[in-house]
Image (cartoon, rainbow, N blue to C red; front, side):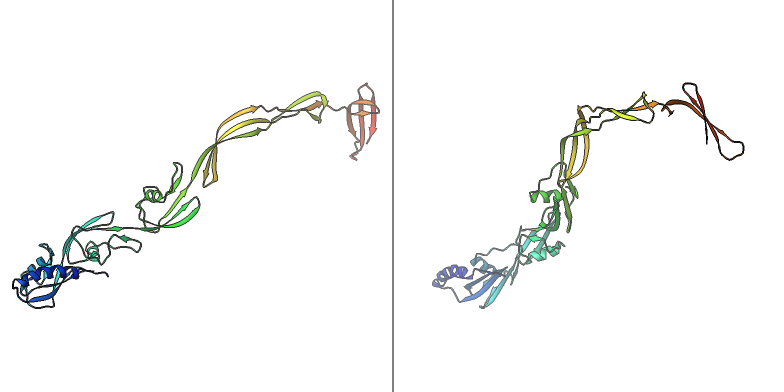
Length: 320
């Protein structure tokens, strides 16, 4: 605790004045101390002067609501006396969210905080020392600071901030927010102790890609080809197209994409497969078979014979 010791200067000033008084025949002098808050003044004054007269000699002004002990009318007879001044002060206690008017006499900043029922947290700051005496018109500013964590582009750090909202905090930290960025909580949300802020940097881009168009397959039939056979009569050729996408990146990673437009730059050529429909003709002994009919024996043995008819009209029988 520091004290402003002014007694040497005050004593020199008063001694000069009192010397003149003594030369003109004044009476006995006494020594006394004036305690005005942390300011202590040691002076010499004529005996039997009142406190009010001594304060005038010391050029110390007091207000109507200040408390002076002893009273202003009290005469001081002996050395070693002490005059104590308790200053009256009308002060403002401002927390940033609410303001309080406090009137007190001879009290300190910490007394005004108690009177206003303002409780400071560990991270809060004050624009005056708590043990400073109140002065009339003093503005006591309590700045609330919050311990917060912020994750920006996946990187998490801890901060102490006196910002009031998420938006204020980001601005104080020089963090630029894009119109597509995702912020949690929202920018207007009030800060509170331990809050977690997340800013996901979101970029939306247009991307043009060249992609392949798969060819289709067409089947044709030919009576000049035997049934069960097929061949590729025209090779397929893939096409090409330009596709424009709307791509969303969150913290540098692709989140989603949407097709905006497509433009064909080369048409695909369909593959053609030809399949035969011509019935396959069975031949025996170099002759074309028209029909082959089975005739079973009546004894139920499962044996019998085939009646084979050829294209030239001849008939042949074959046991089985």
